[in-house]
Image (cartoon, rainbow, N blue to C red; front, side):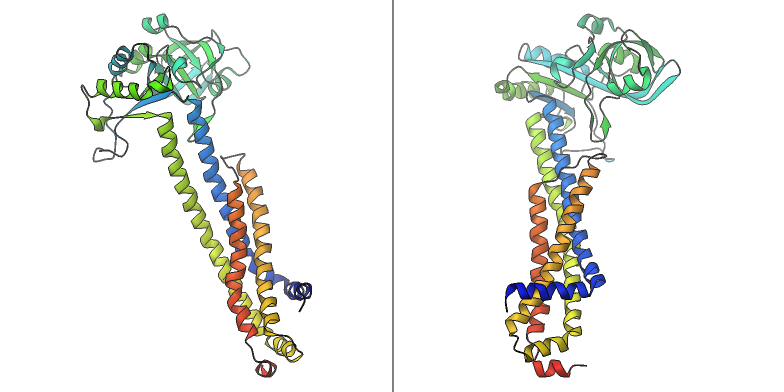
Amino acid sequence: MDINELLKLSIRSLVANKLRSFLTTLGIVIGVFAIILLVSIASGLQTYITNQIQGFGSNLIFVIPGRIGGARTPGGVVVNKLKIEDAKNIQIELKNLANVAPVVQQLTTVKYKNKRNEGTSILGTTSNYTKTVKNAVIEHGTYFTQSQEQSGAKVAAIGKTLQDNLFSQEDPIGKRFFIGSNIYTVVGVLKKRGAIFGIDQDNTAVIPLSAAKRQFGINLVNAIYISANSETQIPLIKKEVNNVLLKHLTEDEFTIQTAESSLEIITNITNILSIALGGIAAISLLVGGIGVANIMLVSVTERTKEIGLRKALGARRGDILKQFLLEAVILSLSGGFIGIILGLAGSLILAKFLVSQVTVWSVFIAFIFSAGVGIIFGMAPAIRASKLSPIDALRYE
């Protein structure tokens, strides 16, 4: 029988049972939709984090408390033993090889007149901060100077979110506002940096390290940022920093990371996440395939007399096999196409609220899966239909 004739017969049979055909394809639609959407979230997250890390600069090295994958306290908490003096010793050791900027961080409430901003991140650091962290750029005004840092001047460079929430349309430069119970003067506004891991980097105020130390009574740093003057010097700098810190810390009490090594870790994690999410979504596609097989088996039973009549009129076993297999493939591919369209649309909508990025390979895999489901799960019903004896089929009640 001609393939065009088989196609017409298959479509006619599916259209005759619209509701059943729709419910059959629904499982495929959900599976394909889930694969594209979940993988797009993982892919978008990877791209977003990669851009954020690259924004810090390829020459960046940072020291954080504790060892990644190392020992923890019984409660799982990392004990911070990094001191401000460690950053000073590192800068002395590195001399002109790199810029060093220790950072202490506190969350507090800031106020201006009758406006309050809760949960503001206060970063205490040195005048080297904007030279060290490449995406910390002053857009308006100035950054605090080394003399202001040394004198403990109460000045601040604020982020865009803090500017909008406190000062609205006012020019914030020169304005005085409260950080906790202390009054600071705005000297600059940082360029917008966006959010990372759901944390708004623009809801921040950067103040001199000496002022932060005095206000918050702390001598421990959350991180030490080091910007190498040349990428070729990074291995040497890591070695020197390690030697300095090992003078009073153990290897489990600090971690030295580069932007490149952090990027590699993040890439590995997001790749595993993509595979895991894709696998979860594939399970729903598998369930959809079982639905296709089930409905096709029901269809074979319902159309037993039709099959017997067609065989009695000269239809070959291969013709029956092709028709039922074609019906299963049409159902699966229809569901696949609808699922791809919904997945693309869902990803675009999701991108307005979360990070989401559709990848070509996820669409390709979803399409191949949907076609494969039709062939694999449609094969058994098609073989069963093709093996029916015309005499037995015509006698079937």
